[in-house]
Length: 170
Image (cartoon, rainbow, N blue to C red; front, side, top):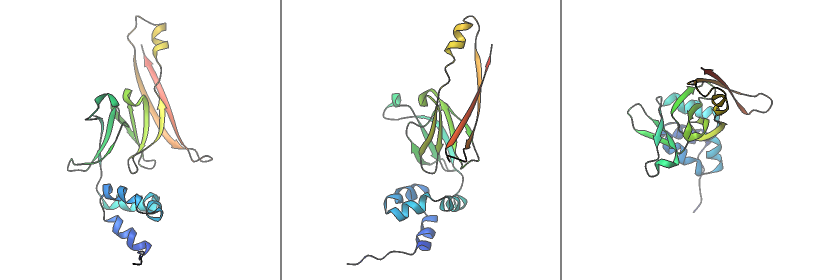
């Protein structure tokens, strides 16, 4: 029995019409399919055909709550499309326009995670700010702090960079 390969444009069109969860599973079919699915052109085309996703950044593992929080991506009907284990936190802090990445903050992720919802990959983890030293200097003062940050990509290295600004209020 001989195998027949489908033309690239046919596979592209079929995968465009396929739900996200099935497309993610299809990465294992072959290296050609994996490369197609990971390409920015396909990701943009697939995103334009399908509706927006909602993010629930603070769901616990159902089977092991101590294992951290999950990041759940849901469609507009409330159905869970994808669960990214352990990438969640106390809340989504920023949805950047840079490659549609999501930044999540919380103690369970020990700082800030930058997550690519299309692949489920945690691209960058920025450790939690240690504010204990400042609190030791002023033990009788109640401390509050605000965190703001921005994300970008360094041109020379093509790596993601996260800038975090912490303002402590005494």
